Each structure stands twice: as structure tokens, then as C-alpha cells.
Image (cartoon, rainbow, N blue to C red; front, top):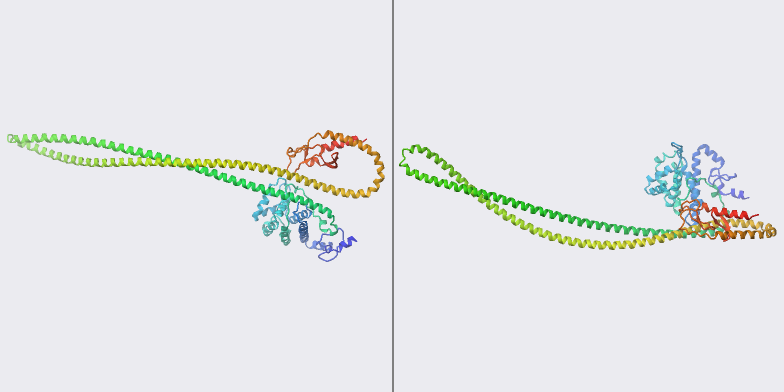
Length: 606
């Protein structure tokens, strides 16, 4: 009856021939019947594959949106419709991939075409960079799966794949001509992906083992009827646990926002500090430049003084030379005057003797002519010497004028030097005042920086405390999940116990005889427990590595206390549960304590 009722549904009708599908297991909704699928396979098997993948994509996207809207919260990576959506998308992207030969093997992966999105869409560079930086990923398929999850969280998957489908020339390097991404079905799937922007997902990509996941489509998810949905009390409990989880996540987000604001404030303070340091360096450079200019002015002043002194010395040497020349000329003039007087006396004597010596007049006539010629030459020399004396007097006057000008220039230079000295003294005093002010400002800034650093340290301590509380809350949520699993197991056991309750009432009489033996065993266990109770409950801060395997704790490798010895272990080394005298329910116990307790219980059994 149930199978007949199921076969009448609209999902179990072949879309090609409109016949009711009467074969078990039931085919996927929207897929052709065996006859029609056989005909389609004969015609074009790749078209049938594309149609089937398109129908599966429609169902997965529709089911994911409906379940997410009814769920009303952010989706985790453990959400089954979300996992099925990623598997279907992986199959769609793998359809028609070209096989590429390498040195070791054949390479066929979807990471190659997804890497193209980084070149076509600049916003996708962050996703590609973060995927490459993930340490746990070793295969290209794992990177592609991480890329799909990050694109869904960013709500940009439809935009990225649309850019990829438009560039069919680039896609032809990775896909065959009949692939889903090269045909119209790929464009339809990309259009359907736009509806996923309504969903909010919070997926932890770092901790998952994406390389070794098996991507198999679970068709039973899409064939469930409305009668299978039940357990309202269970859903209420799950909703309460998820509410607590969302509250913890909101607290974590608020703490992250406060931390980011504090980091921004510290960055702004550091920037202001660097600006002030730069201004101080500029002021120091200005002081150094002014000192250099002062040195240059002093050197120029000394050079001007040296030049003026050298010029005055040259002028004095020229004056000495000209004075010596004047003395020599005066001596020459005196000698010439003596010669003239002597010759005039001789001429007077000769004229007196002319009468007496007429006989000798003829002979002396020639000598007279020669003497007259000499007299003419000497007169010319005298005129030249007079011209030279006039020139020397003119040069003397010019030299005296130059001396006066040089003295005036020296006076002006000395006055300018005094002015420059006064200006330098004033500038140095003003610069010293500015330097003292800058030093005061620096001291104030250093004190402010110390205060800010102390405040930042206190905030970092508060942050560490908040992180510890968050980790503690996460461990408590994990324990709640384990308690929930145990509660479900106990419910099933309760049903079984109700059925076997009547049988056990008959066996109660036999158990009464064994109670005494069990009491003796409990006393032995209590004694062993008393010996073990001397051990101390270790704090979370004191443990950084696992006690057994000595692996370092991280976000993925959590800390767990052994309820027997109090030491801290990882999940792999403390995945045991035993009832203890302190708690009748089974609690977490490390491997060594588990072996020890079981050995003691077995030794007490006769």
C-alpha cells in the first residue's frame, strides 16, 4: 500500500512518455524512465547527462533554499542539504573535463578552470590567495572544494561562474565541446545560483579534510516524504542548543569587533607617533641646515676679509713700488738739472772765448751742432719725464681714491659681519627655544605612549581571558552535543528496556544474590579511587601539549580533561568513557586510566 501511494506522486512520472514508474528502487525525480533514457542514450548520451545534472542542480538548490529558510539560522558545514549541494556542483563542474597528461599520471581536476576566475574577476583574488594559503590542502580537488565554500560564504558564486561561462574560448582549454559548462545548461545553473544569496553560511574550511572526501550524490534526500519528519521535542532541543551556539558566536563577533577597533586605535596612535617623530627629525634637519648655513656665512665672511686684506696688501705694495719709482725719477731730474747748469756754464765760457778762439771756430762748429742735437734729445727726454711725472701723480690720486673705497668697503663688511652675528645669535636662541619645546612635546608623547601601551596590555589580557571563556564554552557545546547523542541512545535503550522489562523482573531474584559481590567490588574500586584522588586537576593554561602523544593544541586539536587523573589530553588520546565513583554516568577518561580501571575490574571478577 505504501509503495502504491508513493508511485502515484508527480515525482514518479516520466517527463518524456508520462508513464508511471513501477520499478524499485525509484529513479531520481525529473529523470527519464528506463525506456526513454535508453532511447535518449542512443540519440545523445551527453545531452542526457547534462539534463540529469541540470535536474539534480535544480533539486539541490531548491531544497537548500527551502530548508535554509525554514531553518532560519546560519548554515554549518555539517548541514546535509548543503553538503549535497556541494557534491552536485562538483559533479556539474567535472562534466566534460579534458584529461591532461603529466609526468607521473593523468590529471583531471576542476581547480584549473576555477583559477581562471582570479584573472577575469579581480574580487576573486582574495579567495584564491586564501585557498592557496590553507595548510591542510594538498590536492587540487581539495582546493576547488574550499574555493566553492568560500564563494558561497561571500555570496559571489553566481557572479564568479558567470564570468567563467562568458569566456568560452578560455574554457575550451579545460572542457570538451559537449561539457555542461560549455552548453546552455551551465548558464541555467548559474542563473539558479543567484537564489543562494539569501542564505547565510558559516563554514569552517580550515579544519575539514577536503582532499579525501568522497563526492557521492545521496538521492534519498530528495525522495523523503513529509510523513518522515517527526520528533518535535528533539527539534526543540536542537534549536535550543543552536540558539546557545549562535549566542556564543555573536559574543565572539562582538569581541572580534572590539579587538579590531582597539587595533585600529593602536595603529592610529602609532601613525601619530611616527608623524611626530618625522616632524622632530625635520626640525633637527632644519637646525642642522641653519648651522651649516651659519658655517657657510662665517666661511664666506672670512674669505671676504682675506680678500680685502690681500687686496689692501697688493695696493700697499703697488704704492711702495710707485713711491720708489718717483724717488728714482726725482734723482734723475736732479742729475739732469746739474748737467744743464754745468753745460750752461761751459757755454758761457765758450762764448767769452769765441772772440779769442776764432781760429778754432770752424773746428768747433761741428762739435756745436752735435751738442745741439744732444740738447734737443735731452729736452725731449725731459718733456717725456714730465709727462711720466704727471701720469704718476694721476695714478697716485687714483690709488688714494681706491684706498678710500677699500677702507669704506672694509667698514661696510665689518658692519655686515656684526649684523650677521646678531642675526645668528637671534636665530640660534629661537631654534634653542623651539628645540626645548619639541623636547617637552616628545616627553609628553612618550608618557602618553607608555599609558597607551599599558592600556593595550590590559586589553590584550582581557582578550586572552575572553578567548579562554570562549574555548571553555566551545568545549561545553561539544559536551552538550555528546550528551545529546547519549540522550538519543538512551531513548532507544529505554524502548528496548521497556520491552525487556518483564523478562528482567523474573531475573531480579538471581541478581539479589550477586549484589553482595558487586558491593565488595565497589569498595575495592573506591579504595583504588582514593589512591588516585591525590592527583591535581590541571588548569587549561598550564597545558600546551597532549600528555600522551605530546602534540601541540590548536583550534582544531582541542583540550580535554581526564575525569579520573585530572590531566589534559587531545580528543584521540581521551576518546573513552567509563562510570566513576564520582559520577555514575560514563565520563571522559584517558587511554592509560581506561586500561588501568578495566584491568582492576577484571582482576576483581572471580
